[in-house]
Image (cartoon, rainbow, N blue to C red; front, side, top):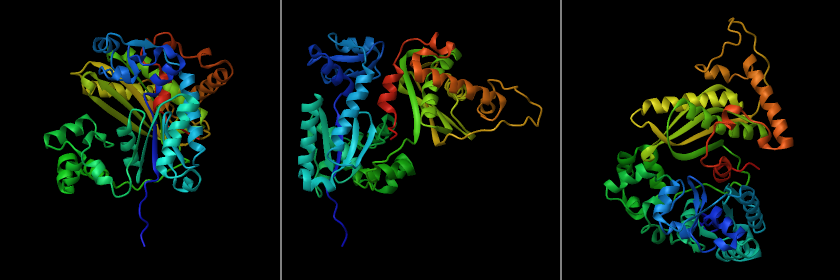
Length: 428
């Protein structure tokens, strides 16, 4: 007999986490519209969101929408501390916890029911403990699949609990806006709107062939499955990072070589340092550039060898970003740059290469893939420099040493600590 599905998957998501932490640290901010950040909104409280303030919005626009908006600096160490403490609470209910970011996780409570009650009771207990012990609001969705539990937690916001029992999936999903499905971004949403598809139920009613014609085979099949609540993924408590990345959002800037190298150099330093700290390296480098008007493009390259060098990663990223900007010369201003490294493996030990073709150390910025070869003399020198900088930073702190072109020229914008906390995969 086939095993009947049960609603034992929980998705717990802390509400407006960064802003909620700031209101926790300073009670005078509670109930007021606040934004974490400076020239750009990093995160907004629900009181600010009610005025239309959103993350990534320039400060001037946010103040236009909410004249009483108060900006506060971020306390990144507190975000990490409290995020970790919340995960410890989750772990006391079940060992099957898959942390997907600093402020959200999936839980499988199938085996915890005899100790803590029904999944709905467990969800309520988690919310109560996080509030009472840590002072933070958390929304919880309970369902039969991971994707449905995540949708339920979004519906539960702010500070609520929504349970979708087995057999109730269609009644719950059908009236919801299609934008709640994973993978429905602005472009996909526009295509669906043009086809008169606004709800998940309307998407579910479309035939696979129609979705494929409308969205392409991969996206059409994926969204059709999610609209039908087909999601066979299980909780992966040992989930490891498939990529390491960082990004920086800022007010509109011209995509000059100086802006690209300074910003991407800073991001490459963050990413490469994290790779080396995890004894990892990667073969695929991806750069994302967002232009004004929210149009974003990506460029990537897969190398024959792995990379974990800060300078090599910088050279590769600048080359990819410049190609993206040249392909969109009608949009000379950018608002975001991002780097990620994937195809991760254990960081290898390299031997020096023999110069059999007589090139020596003639590596230029026009040949970034050559510079990425760790076995070349240039690559070996860069690896030694990285190791020395890592040692100094481990002992004296990250700000003790850095690349002058980045540290002295890099302007304000979104603190990279925020992006690392918000977006990095947890590696445990």
